[in-house]
Image 1 (tube, helix red, strand yellow):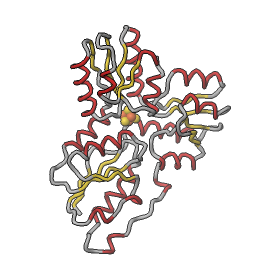
Image 2: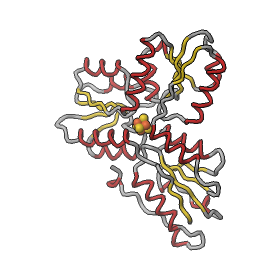
Image 3: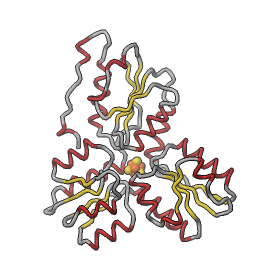
Image 4: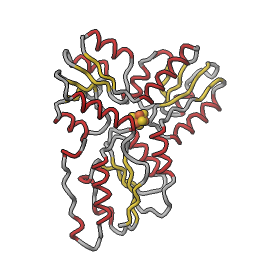
Amino acid sequence: MEVFSIVPRGYCKGVVRAIEIAKKASHLDDDVYILGMIVHNQYIVNALEDLGVHTIDIKGKTRLELLDEIDHGTIIITAHGASDEVFIKAKEKGLQIIDASCLDVIKTHDLIKEKIENGFEILYIGKSGHPEAEGVLSIQKNKIHLISSKKDIDQLDPHQHYVMTNQTTMSLYDVFDLCEYAKEKLQHVIIEKETCTATKIRQEAIRNMSNDIDIVFIVGDPHSNNTKKLASIARQNKEVYMIESIDDLNISVLKGKKKVAVSAGASTPTYLTNQVIDFLKQFDENCIETYHKPKIDKTKIL
Ligand code: SF4
């Protein structure tokens, strides 16, 4: 098949940094726990577990609540960041803290704190329940409104002074639409778009892919917001499949297809994406020997 490996794709600087921090922490002479998934990829979580770095992640529990599960050792704050409350509670419990928050997430926290100090309320475009949004909302709950649709904007006081910003991994295009709508509906709104550069250039590359691509694979974990956004942008005019790894690639969807594009979320191990690309490159619908999928070597994930 003809394969277009979309560039840039895959690991961003925040993910690389967080994984390196966690790997280094595995050498500590202490029990090490990650508060939530270090990045949203189960293969990485499992590989770190094999190194002795334990992930504490319970569906529906916030970072603050997850701390109740840990009573000793060292905790790692994930790339998504955490609120000040989490740092304070961890210190009170006597835990050592290693902060792997992405610097772009910290930049958004700092912006929001400064704007609240200057008297604004914050309109934060984000995903309910996502750890990055959770960290931001805890900065000052009564001053930050989570915006996930135009309906949320309709319910605001149109005379209030707002700053509108967003989760770093949101779709550039959805953020644009919501900001334009807010400018129409609200009298005083300042826009501070915070989609990070890594997300932006990956989304633009998807948006600009060639028209004659028959089918697109986005490799990434179903929990990963930036992976889902890449898929949703591609879906606007292409047949798209989100897969975690080569194991999920359904060969029947390749029938009759000539040109395939591949991209990957910012938290997807490069090894998993390359395995998909290499398989597709050698695939020939008319040659049954090329249907054989390689096994995943879990030692190559980190
Ligand atoms: S996607 Fe952006 S904000 Fe998230 S870890 Fe990567 S660089 Fe940081």
